[in-house]
Structure formats: structure tokens, C-alpha cells
Amino acid sequence: MPEVLSGGNLSFLTEGIDSNLMLFVMLFAFVILLVAGAYLIQQLQGRTWRMVVNGTQRVRWSHFFGGFAVWGVINVASMAVGYVTDPDNFEFRFDAARFIPLVLVAVTMIPIQSASEEFFFRGYLAQGVASWTGSRWWALVVPSVLFGLMHAANPEVAQYGFWVMMPQYILMGVAFGLAALLDDGIEVAMGAHAANNLCGALLTTYEGAAIQTDALFMVRELNPMADLPELILSGALFVGLLAYLYKWQFGVLRRPVPPPFKYA
View: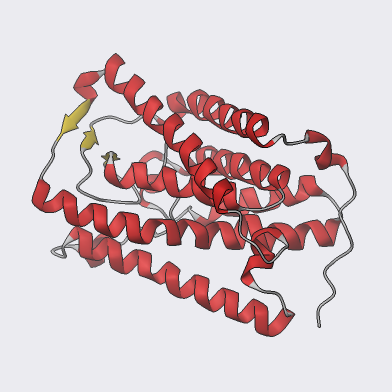
């Protein structure tokens, strides 16, 4: 599954720079983005960052870890199936001196990067679209498409083609967006997004990946179009398992959207 991180193709800037240091610098930009965004929303609209997360003043961390666990297991299982069916496509390349610092950077920074993207797309933007249109369906579609387009400058898009990669990003946006709507908050999507990108940083990488790291395995050949049905199945399984776990009601998608937030 693709790493959903918007970084563009920065290879011309990173040549000769330690990959772990470059990963840290790239991800630190999302720390600044998240803090600045939360500050501006509070100053301009009188809303705290917790209200963007789920409309209340309490973050449901159990839902974050629930989304992380379910998507993480699905992702690892998908990789395991790929390895068993085509082991020659995986090159194992463990280097402790490179991998241990990578783990420290990834575990520290990727959850923040993932939370930043979810905060703006499945949180702030989705809430705005829902208020403007009165429709939860538009709140699913618009952020998902924009989420995909945000990744258009990623190196894998140049490697495999815009119309090949874009469905991958948009479908992941739909899966995470649907989970956020059904759960009435973005914690599940934040956890799943973090799990997805951690797997991409630590377990597998491929030529043209948005996150270029010393992951445990290098995938020699990637076929995004062939992987599309697997992504659809993974997204459906993800939503289905969490719907069972959290007793989601799909009928909420048809309910009228509450009146817009009244700013102070």
C-alpha cells in the first residue's frame, strides 16, 4: 500500500544527505504545520484543536490505537501474503546501524505527520464541507479527492503515472474519511494513517516511494494497478471490523448535518 505522505520529489535536494536525518527534517515540517494550524483555528474561529478532532474537548486515544492496530494488522498481513506468493520480489537488507535510528525517527515523527494530514483533511476540511453543503457524502468525497491531489507531486506519481497512483490515494482517503464520519471523529483515521506510513517506512520500500528509508525489505517490482483490488478489499475490511468493534451506524451518513459552528 502506498505511503500517504505529501513530500514531493526532493531527490535533487537530498543527494548525499543521511536518509534518517532527511526523514526527520521532512517530517518536522508537519509539526510546524500542525501547531500553526491549531493556533490559527483557535485565534480566528475560537475552536480548540480537540474540537477539530471530534467536536468535543476529549480525544479518544483508544480509538486511535484501535485504528492503528486494525490497519497495521491488515497491512502486515498483505505484505506477508505478497512475500509468501513471490519471495523473489523482496530483498531483505537489515542494517542495525541504519535501522535503529530509523525506528527512533519514524516512531517519534510519523504519528505527528499522519495526525497533521488527518487534522486538516478528515477534520477541519471535512467539517467545513459538511457545514457548507449540509451533506456528509460531500464531506467524504471532497476531502478524499483533495487528499489524493495533494500527493500528486510525490515521486511515485512520476514513476508510475498520475492516473495509476491517484486512485490509490483517493481510495485510502475514502476509507479513512468513511471511518471518521462513522466514528464522529478522526482518531481512528489518525491511527490507521500512522500505521500505514510506519509500515512503509520500517518494513517495505520501493523505488519511487515517497518515504525513502532503510526499511527491512526492498520491493523490486511494484504494480499499483494490480494492487488496487487488494486496497479496496483492505479498506472494506478495515471499515467493517471497526464498525463491528465500535457499533457504528451507517444510517448516520443520511442524517442532516447540524447547523454550522457559531464562532465567537
